[in-house]
Length: 332
Image (cartoon, rainbow, N blue to C red; front, side, top):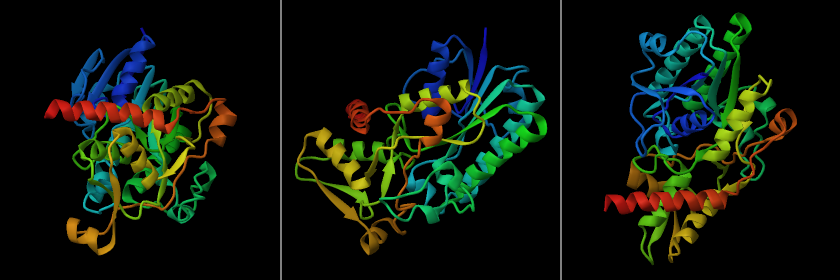
């Protein structure tokens, strides 16, 4: 039987990848600091452990493994990544995991590796116009990510490519653009914008206002989890070896995203854009917004892999809203 290891299998994307691999007939080992939070894992074996520890990585990576997926990282939403308080941990923890993984995959002759990078590695100077952000793969250099999280992702891309050049590591690298959907973190400060908007709208009453950080004109694209998993598998099946975008090209402003959540709630809710001194007074720091505009550019994926995501954002938000509503009902 074909064997796969999923690092970060207790997290959002990793847990969904485990399900996909099981449906394709793989024996799957999941590894994470924690078990899956919302559903029971489908992994054949699940190891709780710290992938920063090279001894653990030696243990979980078998010789001649068919596939290894590296999703494990210290990360979160804007309130975690852009405030500056978590920079050292983000860089140290994620870099250690990737250093251990690349080294061990070469030693054990893993047949193929996937590394999950991020659109946060793109230069901030190309993303100042919310209507026309530049995120084509060839725009990555000269490098100037907007966060330490982005710098670490860029470093780790180069790490895996160096192991490819020097040691023949067979690696695929996907630059994720805001993956969302059911069974993802939806509260506590590490959630992404779609989950945050759905949670806020679900908790609001008629006549309330939904808080949006900043002026709400910053733009992003969001990729539904099923499309993300399909994109990764298409990339893994291909012979394309350069870093490539995995995201949606359906760009919206954050206010538009908030309005989607409000419409799905079917309540009379207004948007309250909290910024400047009012935000600082409430939270004790500047608004953590990141770049003004970011959108996936899927030209390279279309041309080299012959497929692209096309699931509408509204449909994904609908599924996510219903799931978060069910979580809130369960906790009441």
